[in-house]
Image 1 (cartoon, helix red, strand yellow):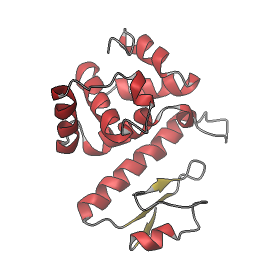
Image 2: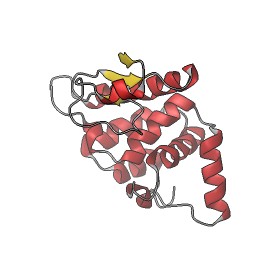
Image 3: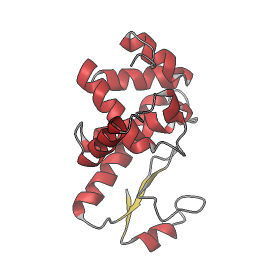
Image 4: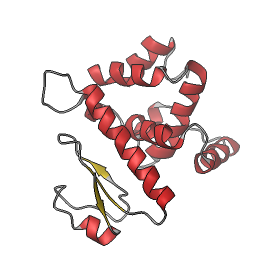
Length: 173
């Protein structure tokens, strides 16, 4: 865990290659599993980001075959799947911000399908994915989360994983 005092110091890190944008709250390296982040505006915010990034480290560990030192299967999955899961695992099933997004979408009749969530430019993967994972865990139990992660990362096909493990297509879900 590499923790910087503020956002400008974090953005200048040489631990991660490439530029880090102002909106980036933290990064987990795929291969070394180092978590790099700045202190947040509050301890609660910092705690949330550390929890979120730890989920990514575990996702990478779970989806990398033990005998291989390659890229984890989690890298093949859509952002709503990976980021939404990290938000669900770090925030829990009820988050006021996500609930506000869901209420607004339902009221305006603009609730996206799971297939539409692949358009991360239009649908923010953190909120929408977190809501989906909260629903899945609420209906099928928390055990469905690692089972779906393992199944989907093996093939990169979220549709078949949901169909196989939940008994219906993502369209039905």
